[in-house]
Image 1 (tube, rainbow, N blue to C red):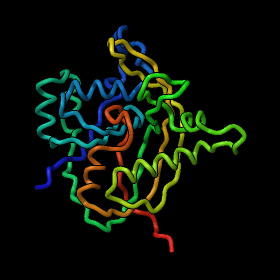
Image 2: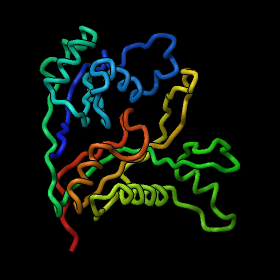
Image 3: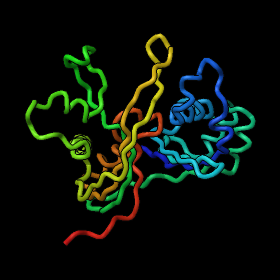
Image 4: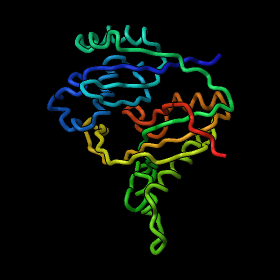
Length: 244
């Protein structure tokens, strides 16, 4: 039996999502993904959507995500755990649909925001398994005198390899739609906050499914790292025209 999961859509006022944080959390004030992660966990606990994607439109913040529980069960969690103001605003603004099993041979368009990072250990990063931007890691390993590396090409190759490792689909087209630097806040082992600079990349493309079960697992897991903080959700759309 295929285990069900759901696409979740919710809207909340930006003033409640991005309200002033306590002094102890001041260092994460610029990381909207972290703050939204904390808010969702506060509302839904372990049932919180992951991966998820969000955008602010005017005074509202829209969130799309994948979760194991439907809208009714999530609202029950929110009523039990959530702050009253958030629960009141969430009523009528939380929706869900079951994610269907997509058959083999289905062509799909997609969009995804990712942090293209790799695990590495070299003379610049001594800690084994440290996380590093894929282009930076490739640059450090690049032979002196060789042609300069194109950042976009490195990220495209990273994405292709990551998708192929997941399996369940065949990439038809892929384009790098946007790229920007982001500052993330992550907890150290002592629970203090560290600021991490990374590169966020938005990919658009089309694919064809080759294994229904593996592709379903890919959707549920998401792409890359930091999937609980607003990255890695594959958002599906009708495909573009097929090339001749």
